[in-house]
Length: 602
Image (cartoon, rainbow, N blue to C red; front, side):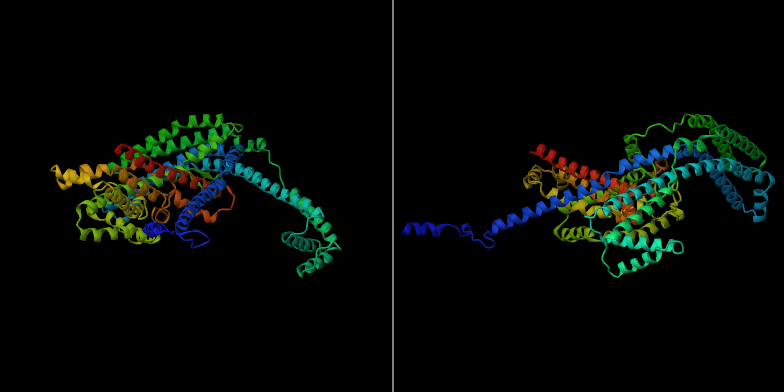
């Protein structure tokens, strides 16, 4: 090699020389392969989770559709229409009991002795009014219960028959498999064979000479004896015997006939509710003879009479609805999907009908998330702006680590804090005398949407703070310097230049914080109260202090108790699918906002 070539070779930088260090790969290739494979593993895991989620939840709509069809065919839907008047009457009696309790409390507030209170409350006129009203609905309750029992009996027998037919299908498949000599006995077949030998020997101990030999054969198999050709025929005989026994227990159900026990006696039902009307009118008339001597109580009694009139006016439309009900009306797949997405009830393990409605869970999740974001956005974004633009180095080094440290606290610890400390503190504060001006105070439940929302805000603040501060950090420094050079103050520069420029990143931080909140499980499970009901938004701000349930909470609470593959099991996976799409939408929206504002900025 010439001196010129040697000088040229020595002049080349050392990092250009690559050496194979593992399996013929240099360090750059190893690092590239490592990070590429890590990304691929993440994609594969996400794909597997998605496939599993949709696979388990896919059968829900079909099963729910079948359940709703049986609900209609058995007459349970008709019974639920009957129950509307019973529930209306029950609500009126509950209202009347509240009036009575308020009357007693008012008498106590006047300083009357208990004997005088009893004399007024238990006067003949008061007893005739209160007790007469409450006894008036006994005939309606009996009528509805009789019809409900008939519908439930038909539905349960139909369900039992379907389960038995599934069992018979399994027996038939096993018999066909055992009959084929090429199929060897499995361990399950062997165990089943031993069990059937013992059962047959026990059931036929005194009438069958083969009973003792079968018992002996069962013991031999237990000791490890090999399966003989004659065992196959014996096993088939025992399985067929069991098949015949199960088949004999099936009691065919014809819904077109059983429905007559539910829907007949419509004229008798008309007489029942007309009789109820007369009894309630008579009971209400006795209220005029009672001297409540309290304007507020008398006002509530007048309102009660108005509610009764509304109740009476609904009788004819109710009877027309019963007459128009059609057992043969089709239930479409779309109706089943709508019953899930727009359903207002989540009722499981019911002896009548299970309902899987998403609205109470979705509304609870959104209510808690709204409370959390109400606190997390100003605190998280405000802290990010202050730490990045206003605070000095000492403050920055003190505040930033402590805010980010909150994300390291286990959610179960935060949940325990909410149950033991925060929720109880809110409840005790609401009971203080100086807080009685608040319309919805005192708060009765320490575990409610507000408690869970505040704790979720605490958990969301680090996410919003970190991402928002990174967005502010990414603002080009020359924009800040140009603003200050033009005479703008530090605050004006921050609010009119820095923050608007970083707005896309801040919005993205907020949306990802919202995703963090709506996907949280442990805190809402411990602190939200877990009452499955759509929040009553007519209560105004008081709705924030109502117990609610959430989508994540219901999955964590009920998944461990359901039967694999059941309707309830698949309903929980459907909730998971909805939660999956909500999280996907949030993340996609955050990325869209960043890209849109980035293009505008460019």
